[in-house]
Structure formats: C-alpha cells, structure tokens
Image 1 (cartoon, one colour):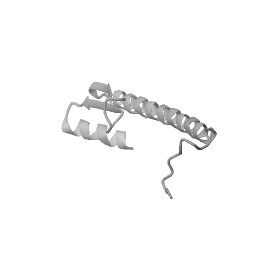
Image 2 (cartoon, rainbow, N blue to C red):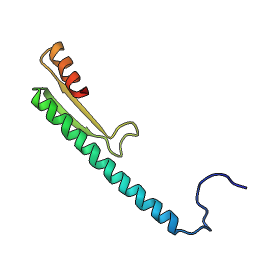
Image 3 (cartoon, one colour):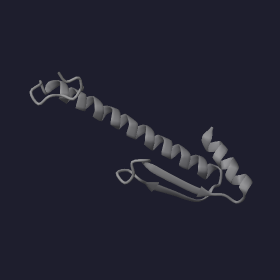
Image 4 (cartoon, rainbow, N blue to C red):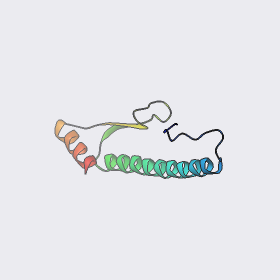
Length: 88
C-alpha cells in the first residue's frame, strides 16, 4: 500500500482542481507581496540617496531568488546606513 500523498490517476479530479486553484491564489498573493517588497526597498534606497540603483528581475532565471537589487553609496558609512535602513 502506498503512503505518498500524490493523487492517483484513478481518483476524483475535483479535489486536484481545488488544490490547483488554492495554489494559484497563494502564488498570486505571494507575487503581490514580493512586488510590494521590491517597491519598498527601491523607494528606501532612493530616499536615502543611494547611487547606481539596479533592479534585476530573476523570475524564471534562478531558483535562488526572484529579484536582485544592487546599489552603491558615497562612503563605507553611507553604504552601512543604507543596509541598516533596508533591514529595519
């Protein structure tokens, strides 16, 4: 007897369809929260006068991250302050 939760081809597909709909709703909510976080980070960097801000979209290109944001500052102290402000 199998103990894995994978659906069988002979089982009712209605439960599988419900699961797919719930997953797509969750993914949509996740996508919205990711975009909101990206926007927040970019606006904070801009407000703190970061230089050379670059946003690289890694969606469907990397399994590690969906986005990469790189910025520079005028000095070590400025870069440290940028990082601290992003983390808060």
